[in-house]
Figure 1: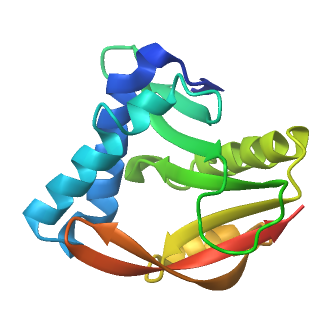
Figure 2 (figure 1 turned 180 degrees about the vertical axis):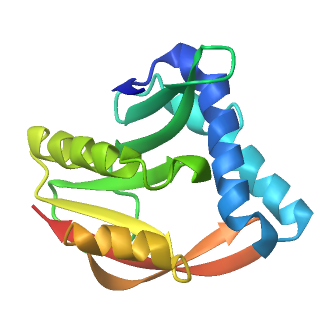
Length: 174
C-alpha cells in the first residue's frame, strides 16, 4: 500500500538517499563519476535537499511504501518553492524543483498522485503558473508533464559537476 504525507525534518537522511538513488538510476550513465558525485553531494548533501525540509519557502510531499522489513520507505517525492529561473515570470509563479519516483514504482500511480498534490499546492498558495526544468532527452518526463498541460518555453543550462546539459523550461498556466 502506498501512502502520502508532507516531509518532516527527520526525513532528511532517507529522502536524500532516495533522491541520490533515483537520480543515479535515471541519469547515472550520462556522467563521469566525479561529476555525478559532485552533483549528488551538492543537491542532496546536508546543505541541499535535507536543509530545505525546515525552510518555510519549500513544500515537499512524500510517497511511501512498506519495504522488506515492513517499515515505510520513501519511494517518491515532489518539491515546490519560489522560482529561481531567470526570466519574466508572473509574481505569483511557483517552481516545481524536483519530481522523483523510483523506477520500480513507475506505472503504479505514484507520479499522478504527487502531481495532483503539486497542482493543488500551487493553487492553494495563490500560484497562477508553475515553472520547471526537465532534461531535454528525458522523454518520459516530457510526456508526463505535457499530459498535465505543461508547455516548453525555453532552454536553460543544468550543471552536473563539470558537465553542462540542456534542460527545457516548461510552464503550466493555472
